[in-house]
Image 1 (cartoon, rainbow, N blue to C red):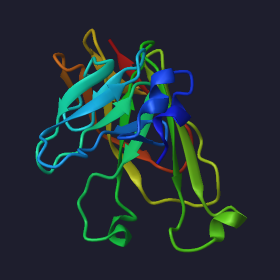
Image 2 (image 1 turned 180 degrees about the vertical axis):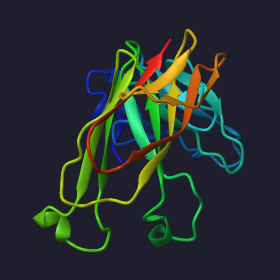
Image 3 (image 1 turned 135 degrees about the horizontal axis):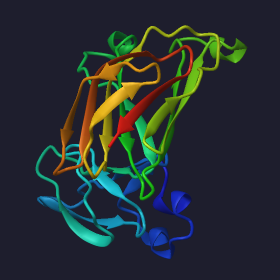
Length: 214
């Protein structure tokens, strides 16, 4: 958890915001802090693209805005230019989720780019200190999503089961792996959301590229 000013130090208004926070540099959380309220006043830093993590659409807001926050819903927004890795299967504990596949949420910035990383270890020991971990970086640029060759000695069994690209305007003709294999996808033109299913990519291993042809 980080205060807004820690991430947006050049935005003077962010120094006065104490009712919301960032998770890392990618996710902004705007909780309800007043009893009985069904909406919340949320500050959106100007010049950034923000996406609702539930609806996946770009909210197109800047400055202070009232946003809906029905009972049981905490407004969370992904920052444009970030790639967030999520495990989407509901389990009874983190131990049972350890080997679950992941989904990449690619939130495009104004230039159509994004970046992020994934880190995995055994979740129970200090063996990462002797190199038993896996770290892979992701970068979206010029319509190509690149996963770097993974670092570390851990051979993670997790795989990428879905890629979700937010803010992709202008249509999508096909999605192709670096080797030429076409991938199945759905594209929502109204929201600008592309969903690629079953790319069959492992979390650890060699580098790979997925191209989005518009």
